[in-house]
Amino acid sequence: MDQRHIRNFCIIAHIDHGKSTLADRLLERTGALSSREMMEQVLDSMELERERGITIKAHTVTLRYRAADGEEYLLNLIDTPGHVDFSYEVSRSLAACEGALLVVDASQGVEAQTLANAYLAVAQGLELIPVLNKIDLPQADPERVRQQIEQVVGIDASHALAISAKSGVGVEAVLEALVAHVPPPAGDPHAPLRALVFDAAYDPFRGVRCLVRVVDGRLFRGQAVRFLASGREAAVDELGVFTPRPVAVEQLAAGEVGYVFAGLKELAHVQVGDTLAEASFLGPALPGFAEAKPMVFAGLYPVDSSAYDALREALEKLSLNDSAFRFQPDTSQALGFGFRCGFLGLLHMEVVQERLEREFGLQLLTTAPNVAYRILTKRGELQEVHNPAQLPPEGMIERIEEPFILATILTPDTYLGGILQLVQERRGEQVRLEYLGGGRVMLEYRLPLAEVVLDFYDRLKSVSRGYASFDYHFDGFRPGNLVRLDLVVNGEPVDALAVIVHRDRAYTRGRALARKLKETIPRQLFEVVVQAAIGSRAIAREVIKPLRKNVIAKCYGGDITRKRKLLERQKEGKKRLKRVGRVDIPQEAFLAVLKVDV
Image 1 (cartoon, rainbow, N blue to C red):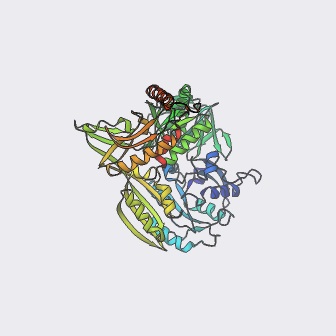
Image 2 (cartoon, helix red, strand yellow):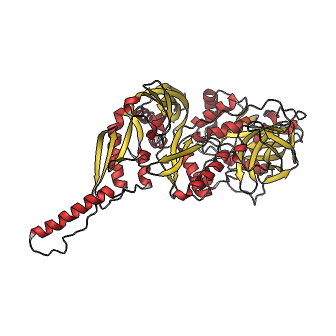
Image 3 (cartoon, rainbow, N blue to C red):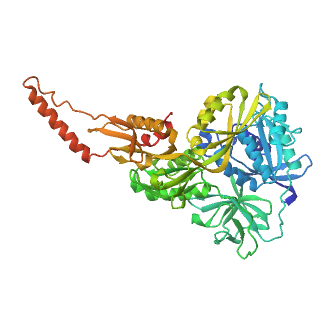
């Protein structure tokens, strides 16, 4: 198709503002699917996405639309997630587009992730088209939301499109706005091939499938190509587009988006952000993506140690499909061989664990999540520690630096007091507080990431009754008064349960953790002592009483010395058992850190 008739765009929005529903209506209006084939959230094809009601993976779909001017246009929609943990997926989708629909709920107004995604789009130089969704709701206030977009986001919203994605009102105007305002792709169709690999997935039958945006030249079947970053050469087996069903095509021209199979079986041969070019190409690569930096770390271990190789293979396949995910081999005294994994946030961690269990049939143990710390030793060495068990002895540490984030919270002013109290409890430092009008307040706070990663989002939603929205980005490392808190079971430290906490909260946290372990570890035939310790000093202690058989039940009378003899013999036996006995710690104990309320 003529490059002037191609439009590449994405939809960006906060969670539950109607992004996936609008995508459904666009599919309907362009005839991509018949009414029989339609279902809600067509592009959210993953079972996990439907259960949680969120978009996790970016999806592409090619639509053909005949506009009011009588010309036929090719619209390439690249769907994007809405949750803060998947902002890396959003940035990759934006890199393959020239325009974006900024969807805002006309009843809720601008939310934190709306703001964050809009800034990402502006930074990429995209043409933003504001869309006010859910105008058919009784509480909708389009004029107020228009003012919010102009005040908070900083773009002209006087001509924002008012639609209802659920009923289909105004969807035709959205398609016309895309054709009129989104610029066509600017690549050279006669130049040597250069295509941006913006996503990839593993097909067990076909190998690696790459999603590409052709920038220059054209890509055709049988063509000899090379991935510039890895240097891997291959021949194109199959090309296609999603309509949203995969449809094979003979070629992809400059400006078009589609998928490529090139017979690649090795996952390491493809990097998201790489440039796909002709095998003889000697020119520069396309600008890729800034590498995603994991913010949260946790250990993944197979329940059955014989499944270690299966877990490694599953992680390799998943990391290709999710390039923000990182992993490396690790060992634990308590859990054996496994992997230390890096995630963008707690939801990202939960999604990866569920995908591993569902898609690959694995049974996993997951340690409590933690963040990366920087350690300056007294020798002047700077180390980055992802696991509390790797922390040097206290006497060797000059200082510990913890990661901070700059958080943006948008909330109705009714809940401002409770939110201010929450961020103060989490050692927050106020940067800005601004009233936006219409009873809305925008807060900016610097917060330690460790205070946010566990249950901050849940607490924020509880305090604000679900009305507050939250977004953040990394804001560097800062020194803190931090210590390593160990949990010791019968004199043996459990490295998988170690945590790094602020010294002022160590005692309270230690007591709560020891008490929680007492509840989660089942009773044994011998006494089990659970301690929370800083270095060699125990700061909290709980005792799990042993199960006890009534050995004197058969004594109906007689001398008391006989009963004492039986009780002493039982006592000696329990002492011997304690020396050789082993305490099995259940998975619930490793998640106790998440659920401790201090």
